[in-house]
Image (tube, rainbow, N blue to C red; front, top):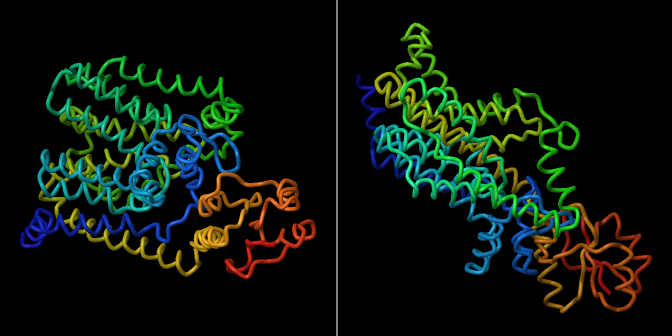
Amino acid sequence: MTERFSFQSLLQSTRTVWVVGVFAFILFLATDLPWQLDDYDQAKQAFTSFEIVKEGHWFYQRTPHEHVATKPPLVAWISAGLFTITRSWDAAWRVPSLLSAVAISLLLFRHASSSYGTAAGLIAFSAFNFNLLTPRLATLVRTDMALTLAIFLIGLQIWQKIRKREVWRFHDRLLIFVLLTAAMLIKGPIVYAFLLPGIAIFQWWARKNNAPDAWCGWWPWMGSLAIFLFWAIGGCIFVPQFYEQVVLREFVGRFGETVHRPQPIYFYLPHLLHKFAPWSVLLIGVGIVDLRARQWKIREVLRNISPEVLWLICWSMGALLVMSLIPSKRVDRIFPVIPPLCLLLAAQVAQHRVRTMRWAGVALLVSIFFTAGYAGFKIFTGYRDHRDALVNFGQAVQQTTAANHWRYEILNAPDEGLLLYAQKLHFTRPEQAVAEWNRGNLDALLVLGREAPTMMRDLENAVLSPGPSMPGGEYVLIRR
């Protein structure tokens, strides 16, 4: 009894909540250090808001290599707005994900605490923050966290309606419409895959058991889809290659096995068990204990389960199933199922408080050390391997050329982030660079180190700049 009481006191302590919250926020800020844009397509997402600010392309943007940007522009709009306030691109690019992560964390704690108690709220909060996905995505320049927030708010609204047994009113449907529209303008109709399967399964069960309604009606779903289609059709009409690159390749191509690299149907399940550990182990373990106590009578469990808990199961498992059926897969795409799993875990802890409190406390301690170790390893290897070398080089080039009033361009290069580090809008082709240089319109040229000797043979009075340099000479600056 003493051990159980100590864990229960730990999980219900206000001091514990504050310590865990502050530590989680530090992890959010630090895990991706040193900040750079060279992986996970961050440069593509960052470039959209950069282009909006520099060229005013509000509805359709491109990538650094002149392809059509494949995602709708809502997050880019937010980043562009933040830049006008902060004048910092790092803040503008990373704050949307950070604020989304903080909002989800606080909502989880608030609603789990009010429904299941402070200890369960802390477990839901910790399960979301201390895993191998959330700290990495919290400051990544991507749309995953913002999409997860929009999906979570919709699912949470449904959960509250079911729990309180309330009917859907116009203002509720209007809120769902706004959230669905936001999700559509973040990443398109993928929001349907995370919500509609769970709603369909729950509605089938609800009609047989006189349960509350999870369905808000058709118009919020159709209205938000119409807005997205308006954007997509406009792109097909006015933007060259939009249909081929966005509609066929990005959206339709996800369901085929030729455009994107397909993965087996079971791909997400082991990754989710690993990335969500130790909470995934606790979630499964408590479920098994409950089934054993009921002598594995699954029908009895389903008859006695509360509608709001069943919704959480339908929501998370329906999304996991449908996303697993889509051939194109990547681990972070399944991230929106994490928040409902956190709420489900809180409900389990509250239902089996005496038996699970000790294991929940152990899981909290393990997750903190596990996640902190992972974050520490990423930070250490990032600085050791000079992961920010290209960032520093690009900024040094920008400062040197500005100080000397040099007109310069960047030769087409594989690193998309280089344009953003040097604050340039376009790469230039070799033949164009040679022509402009020899006309006297360029004073400096940033090129790949291996291409420098070939380029310098064609450039009049060209020498290597002794200024900014990269370790290993991957990129060099040529000047007159």
